Image (tube, rainbow, N blue to C red):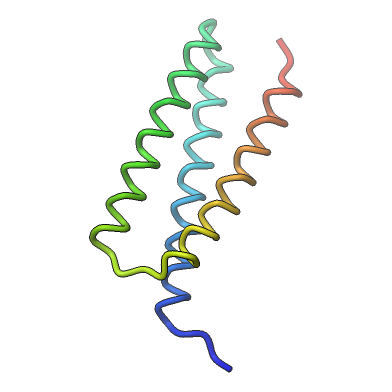
Length: 95
């Protein structure tokens, strides 16, 4: 039994979207260590990332033919892995 190319394309897009979100998260955390406004940078970056992620997901659903369960499933998996990385990074942060 083979997997359709549309499913692989959807999985790839989901992983890519989640990886971009995670990379943006790591970038914001890295920038927050270089400033004395840690809370403002982290919370502002989180709001901007969430708005960008929701906008990107809506645009993908509207304009790119993806298999929605495959796309959403892989996006959520990578997204949650990125959030776990972010939480661990914040908990191990040293002043």
